[in-house]
Image (cartoon, rainbow, N blue to C red; front, side, top):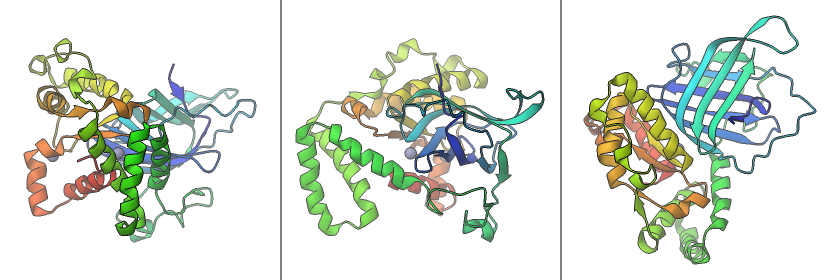
Length: 320
Ligand SMILES: [Zn+2]
Ligand SMILES: [Zn+2]
């Protein structure tokens, strides 16, 4: 059964790029926020758009707030169907209403959010009014974080998850972070901590190659036998499996589904290491196409657009 968050999502934003869907969802308790960091594309109606939305769907009071203890606050994995083009018949009403439908496959399996007749607007990323973000939107949009995006939330969560790690590791981290306290400025300490975690695992713990996560690579379709449409299905299936293990694939704009699937099957999954110990944490491990892409490389040399995103995500996740 999919995890259905429709009743508990209050509002959010969605940013659709080529091969990537980013965004966040604010929950109705006014404090929790889920970050979306998905691979793939929206349906044509939302493709390339940046939207902000708010639910007008009254919450069923008899329904208890679902148990979110297993929910990963940083949701990664392949995008499913993401569209605002569907009409659905609302319960108790005899009219067709537009809906915003979000579906993806994450650490929590299949997740859906369906908002019936939500408030929706495009965010103009270029206008300077919007650049100051959020403040002068609509009174209806009261964002729980002011103009801060929910990265902090994720870090808080992930930091607390470290307590689940073995004692030796905890001590190792504590010792390291004690020495870091003197040099690290606030925001950086989390990512330094994450680097240290990886450091420790590489040094002291067993690892496996990624292909062990998906079973045998031989049991998956051979990229050379697939056309682009078939590759889309194969890629989504593969990314769904990886997502269940907290493994994300950041796909640059230059890759087709077939390129990406071939890259994963023939190189990345055979080379990258996987750390089963991280399963108990909410650690997200990112694989990416950027390092294998000549076009990205060129842009990097020239210091243009895409590079910013690349560097941003590297800083943020610090898995390199
Ligand atoms: Zn991420
Ligand atoms: Zn690229």
